[in-house]
Image (cartoon, rainbow, N blue to C red; front, side):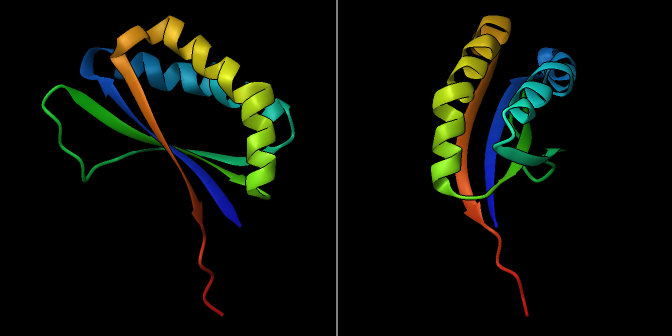
Length: 103
């Protein structure tokens, strides 16, 4: 299984609104495509920054090809919507991770 992870740094003043927006707008629209699965939003407790809080938004995805399809068709548009709402108050850094299952 692959996990599409985006780590967001959000200004303290906007963190609460960011979490609400992610749950009410971003996650439902990301899932609507059927290409991403099992969303999970976590606050990153091990990271300390002077002016921001950090969050990890994760989705399971079948393959890197499906992730690319989602990004081209939907992800770029969602990113633009987020930039309109939060401007320079939220920045995201994405990674694709493979879950290592112990057998």
